[in-house]
Length: 188
Image 1 (cartoon, rainbow, N blue to C red):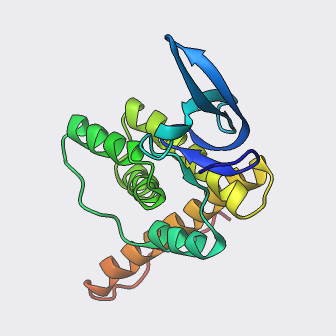
Image 2: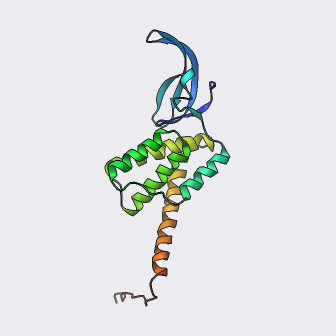
Image 3: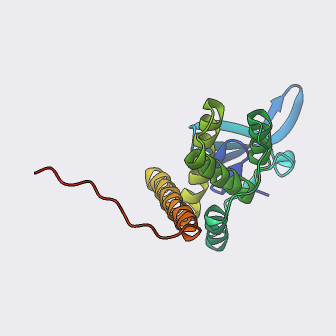
């Protein structure tokens, strides 16, 4: 069960804090609800307490799991559908699971695709939302401020992207014979 003050993640919305547990009558039924304030979009959601886990509500990851998530982000991308509609649905379904590793995969794969080929408008929006959701969880897991967590994730992706670019250049250069570099003459 979740208690007031618990840091939790609600799939598709991100990390937040349980603000209160209260009994309410909704649609003629009296139930206990958890009121959760979601950081990423400053939304408040109410989840029936007995359905919280079925709805995908879970506690924020711990520091050990943070390291595993960072490893997923640094890993090579996985094969995604070539058709952007299928790719979009594939990634949306992964985000909906609420699983932090699935979310990290989406962030990583969209980051790689953005560097390699660019993203469609819908994918750009999804990428931005996925990064914010992941950053919201990292914020609580690593005890950071919101902007600090966003900057941390952006810098990490930038560094990983730079490393991937250098690896691609090195791999391409390794397969070709060395040719003398041509330099333009400096203007006199």
